[in-house]
Amino acid sequence: MTSRADDTPYDEDRLQADSDEPRRRPSRRAFIGAAGAAGVTAVAVVATPSVAGALDERRRGDRAPRDRDGGRRRRGDRPRPGSEPATTTSGSLNTVPADGPDRFSRMFDRRNIERRDADDMRTALTELSRPGGILDANDPLEVGPIRLITEPELSPDNPDNPTITAGNTFVGQFIDHDLTRDAGSRLGRPDPLDRSTNLRTARFDLDSVYGGGPLESTDLYSDDFRFLVESGGQFEDLPRDDENQAIIADPRNDENLIISGLQVGFLLFHNAVMDRVEATGLSGGDAFAEAQRIVRWHYQWMVLNEYLPAIVGSALIDDIRQNGRQFYNPARPTIPVEFQTSAFRFGHSQVRPSYRANLAGDGGDPFFAMVFDPATFGDADPDDLTGGHRAARRFIGWQTFFDFGDGEVKPNKTINPKISTPLFRLPSSTLPMDRGGELGPTSLATRNLLRHLTWQIPTGQEVAQQMGADQLSSTDLSAFGGFGTALDSETPLWLYILREAEVVNDGQTLGPVGGRIVAEVFMGLLEMDATSFLVAEPTWLPTLPNRNGAEQFGMADLLTIAGVDPDSRGQ
Ligand code: HEM
Image 1 (cartoon, protein in one colour):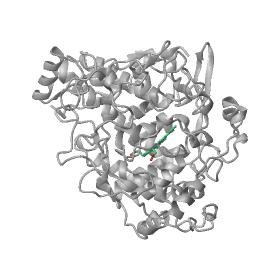
Image 2 (cartoon, protein in one colour; image 1 turned 45 degrees about the vertical axis):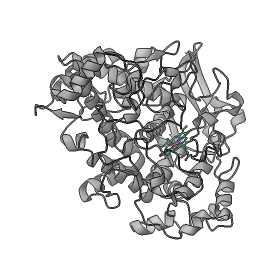
Image 3 (cartoon, helix red, strand yellow; image 1 turned 135 degrees about the horizontal axis):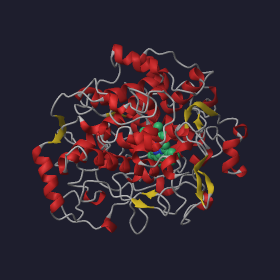
């Protein structure tokens, strides 16, 4: 846990030295050099003496990996994805709930519960979401990954979203993996909420990056409190074991190449911030605690000021700031199932069928690929973007995903009930194991809908009514009406939210029901976290350099400080 030792204001003038002309694109050297270590100079923040001392002690002593009971663990013993226990954070620099493991919660009342445990409902939801069914965007995969990007008219049901860049999708997935991980409820069978644990802390604290901190997650860190990072041949890669399994705090952050790239980008971002903090004279555990605070606060800033407005619009955020949260008011920070199963899975609709992973990494050529391609599953260096592999071409050129001002950025897909075709046949490595030990369907849409039965999620209409929001009509939802279960008037919340975004906002942002659930949960989690910048220092502004002028900090800035930006790569 960190605390400010003084109230010295940040020296913003020095940080903005290179940003007098908004939108001018600075060279990387000017960009970084403008601030030097200034982004951290005015900060005198330390870990509590006992934690800092313990960290320093640990640095000097035995650093063999230990499991959460304190036993030694070899790298090869790492649990497989989906099977590991909750990361314990006690004794680390991460905050930990004092009152037991995190459970999921509810935001809205449920009615008509029996409808959600009926065989005809399971059958209808599975039929609706099968490969080639009405939720499948039916992208013509046979034309190949390049034409699916350059000729969007080939996928008329899966239009591009001109207002959001391709990287926003994976920031969303990265945030999802920071906030929520169902420990293994039963897919499609009702489970009480207390049957599952959320393996992530319900706060924007990057526990999916920091794990239990250097004291406990010793296999993530070097002796100098930096993250271990390896090379994939040309550029950075996550540390991997002999089977190419990533050695990271949450294995889902190696699920596809783009989220792997974000994870290693955050590792490098922390390491770069450590350099800056040490340049101010702090060292050891104190420097780590301060770097972690700076990393978390810049991340939280980006979430609140770049990511969230892009998906819900600024007006809703302003409304919640002025009038308070109306529907998310739990006694303690928890993840509601309406968010976990429905609203925040909207991001599955943003995923493109194919991406340009980098511009010159494939023997001098760009690396274009489908996000997932069953024909290549199991290959050592597959021609798709599945994670869990190491090869020289498997890194991300970020100018495709975020706006570096060079005209290379590409859009993501609109939010609507059409899901990109590759997500209907996921590789088994991406799927969480059911508590019954089964992998279940490989269609992501089917899994989302069956999870509504698991948690008995209220329908979209019920939630809209409880919110007092305008309801979609059965005509708006008529596509879902043909499955013998009246899904056009009792629509699963995830589907309702996707269709609402399409009907109300042309799929460019979430609509009133989906947007409010996401925005209230995001803002509530930040407002209930005593260590977030919103609570600890509400007037705080980013202190690290940025490219767009005062009071800004976004993913392009973060990746530049991490040293994985296009200028640093030279491609
Ligand atoms: C290629 C991209 C993605 C893939 C392959 C993917 C895949 C998956 C899978 C397999 C699950 C578990 C499904 C289940 O059994 O219930 C899941 C859960 C989830 N996904 Fe995604 N996802 C992707 C992107 C996203 C994005 C962009 C978002 C949000 C913006 C998102 C939000 C969620 C949430 C909130 C969960 C529930 C997590 C939990 O608590 O366990 N996903 N995803």
